[in-house]
Length: 329
Image 1: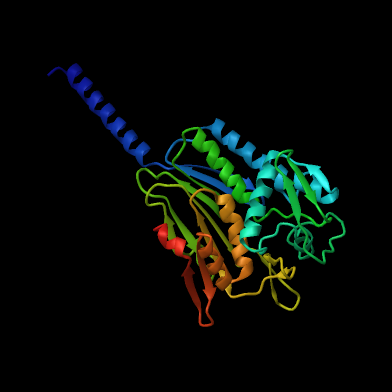
Image 2 (image 1 turned 45 degrees about the vertical axis):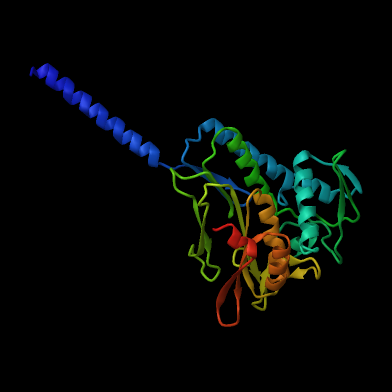
């Protein structure tokens, strides 16, 4: 064999070897993009490559929802409404969609979900007051006209969309990725999560944090064994609270029945929904506000999958709604 032919064979074998390595790497890689938004993080993992142009569109979605729903931006749509009381106002498609879902969750939760407690949240220090009067003595409500996209409200109480906006943004990103044939992904904005498809042939796995620990110790691991869509949201006081002057823990979750921070033995609520993380996000807050027993009863009546981690007086325990078992998580 000539030296020339031998070198050609070696080069060919090296090329095949490199192709095999590249193929193995690509079929086992998980691509990730991330950033900051809504006072927290966002991240997307996918077994499919997400190009820079997709990242730019995703950032546009995040920023658009922020300009609709942020309680911190003075010029967001919801804050303009909050600061300028008018009984009848026209609203954007995104805000209309958010408020429609919020209204449905309010009804199903028997009023334990109400997004018109922004002044109470502000008074407790969980959102800015913009140097406005933040006195709120009673709950109030609103009506929607879906035909002309209008909002009617009956008081100058403020909206607070912090319990639903992240879930809505995650849902919008999922719909964007899905429509662009990027169907194997995990999307996370501050703990509101969608898993869809698979990770190189394996299910996506999500650990639900043990609320008794400050670090990421999972109590339960959820995966989409059938590579299906799952929207996952968790609400818990270990995530967002303040400590009062007397050392009392002040919850960020407010009971609409009392307009006071909740005090119950629920440590965290996780909701899993097969079609919408926006609903899961809102439900998690509602079930957290009402306490474990009522949460399980309402979840069972409405076929909602929830996991409740609670303090039974001797330590932590976990209970589930019937739908949780049906999902085979």
